[in-house]
Length: 424
Ligand code: GLC
Ligand code: MG
Image 1 (cartoon, rainbow, N blue to C red):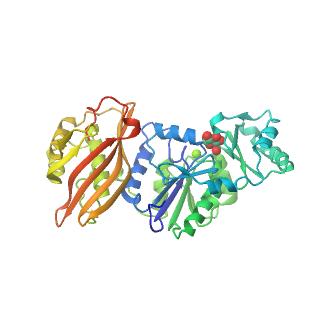
Image 2: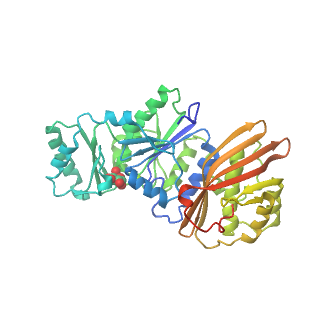
Image 3: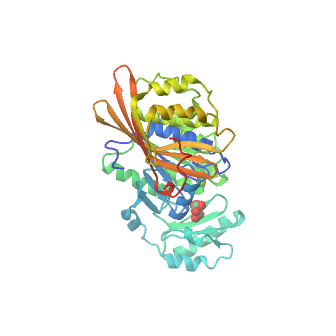
């Protein structure tokens, strides 16, 4: 969060399963649309927060399965664990507040008396979260009885039912809503309260997010019955909360537009962005997002196999520009673009997607820009990523010129043996 020196223009706080991630879409299209929009228009001055019921273990698994961006803040285990940045540094101050009237041993003992409860996987049992499965028809009754029993034992807990099957027991002061309130308070104390905050969710454990004061909210179109019921009973008259028409990340994009929180047109929804040079503001980050999207479309054969594209790309490269391939080989940038010709449509009808993460541009000297990003490529069942650095120069009247592109394999991609299938 130190990355930003002033308040974020927008802070998105989103649930993952069935909100950011559509498990019914094997192509991950709405997520990829969101990703491009975020990297294009928000990454540099806004904050991305994921708030999931998953434990750190299952969260990391999801990151391997789906093209998720790297958030600035990760809230896991239903608001009981907060971490910051890429290296996920835990907020120990938050953990300390959760010990009030909480005793894991007592929760385990009391829940043992309910045959309706089936314990979830070991990974999902956390210091401040005990989780079960329970049938929809039993959930209400079990919740009521269990609350009474735990109260008698001197505990102050919160029991949350989600997804029509999951029952979580947390300290009263925990939960996604409380974790968000804590984060907002922390940002405020640093003089960095976001200009706007948008909470996004689909199920019971997200309900609290929508009652945090001054926060916009979107329940995605596919929201669960329990969340819609909660909304009808508690937040029906709040104009800051909408039920989107679109599923998952599509609903998030829709909400950004409806609440006028900033740009809501994803570069993925623009068919010919290489032609649109209308953007007068020099923004090297935009160039990179657009280039890699073009690269995906070129290889999928979704743009015309036209010399004009190659010519336009070459025109934006410095004639002496260098590309350092992740294998270490150095090539000319212009030759690399030339080579692209033979790959037009080679991924047609195949599983092939490209996305960029953490695109950040800094002006290193007047007119010289360094853009750092992670470029990812999913090809069939294989996924690889490269830390990428692009150096641009901005020349009066000529726009941005690509000077140098340098790539190195990300940790998990180093182990793969074949370097030759990676073009750029
Ligand atoms: C995630 C967690 C699970 C929890 C559920 C609802 O699926 O893995 O433990 O019960 O979210 O919060
Ligand atoms: Mg969910």
